[in-house]
Amino acid sequence: MSTYYFLPTRNVFGEGAVNEVGDLMLSLDAHSVMIVTDKFLAKSGMADQVVAILAKSNIKSVVFDGAEPNPTDKNVEAGVDFFKHHDCEGIISLGGGSSHDCAKGIALVASNGGRIHDYEGIDKATKDIMPLLAINTTAGTASEITRFCIITDASRHVKMAIVDWRVTPKVAVNDPELMKGMPPSLTAATGIDALTHAIEAYVSSAANPLTDTAALKAIEMIYRYLPKAVANGDYMHARDKMAYAQYLAGIAFNNASLGYVHAMAHQLGGYYNLPHGVCNAILLPYVEEFNIIGNMNRFRDIAEAMGINTKNMTTTAAAQACIDAIKLINRQIGIPANLRELGVKPEDFEVMAQNAQKDVCCLTNPRKATTAQVIEIYRRAYEGE
Image (cartoon, rainbow, N blue to C red):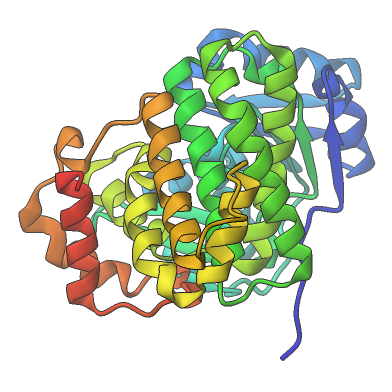
């Protein structure tokens, strides 16, 4: 079977990189653009900053601030109408995963027609999207470089996983200066999201040497620098390292895909509108403990990337040390202890487990689970065992 490797055409890193977006959009032949962001970034002045940078390159821009924390099909529909009304030639997404996913959904529908629901699954689009540039403001989702687009179906309370190489942005900009204002809780949630990407990609049944290299380096950097970034958001060295780490994790999962952590977290987000990174963080140790027997040596590798000396450990002990290390960093950075604290209801476990089994992310999990086993993982994460 052939192995595909997906990545944006151009990636721009470093403090001040956002100032290049005007020239970058001109290189994509887009002179009138729609900026997709959330209400917080629109009010904070960051969207206006991008508008001013674009104006210096004689690019007209309009701001759509309708990207909700877990973007919905309604957000996409409103965005498509906004895009058409303003006769835009391209899109810039500004923010974290929610803004990027919303922008991808808008671009997909505006270019291909129909409804966003038509593209749930893998590679359903038939036409290229218009120029899309992603400006990242968090160190977590890596949505600015991936072919994944997660949109909530508001009527079904289900997160639709849209995986399509055509939604990958043409250009990704990672400027750690834009990440400096993230509060500790958001830094923690997005950082653990990145750690989840790297771990799930490394143990994925679709892992390959390219993704392995990126995943292990991401794990090493996140475990070292995430607590520092949470402790002091102005520490630019940690912010810079986290920007690179989440990007490496994105490279890994964009090509090796994910597993049951994301398949299950998507259901929590769809049912309760909970923060994606927090759901991942709580589920991660319980799913990976379930996964250990699927590829135990890989968990030893992860433990070593986290700085654990496994030389005198059995493979089983090293794998368990990996799980313990995940729980430790969760405690250090203030992740809630269990799903109960988030208001999750046990009576919803069964339907969420059934929906998780339909999520494309579970296809590459290293251990196949029954619905009853998925319910049990939810229960353990609920109790915080």
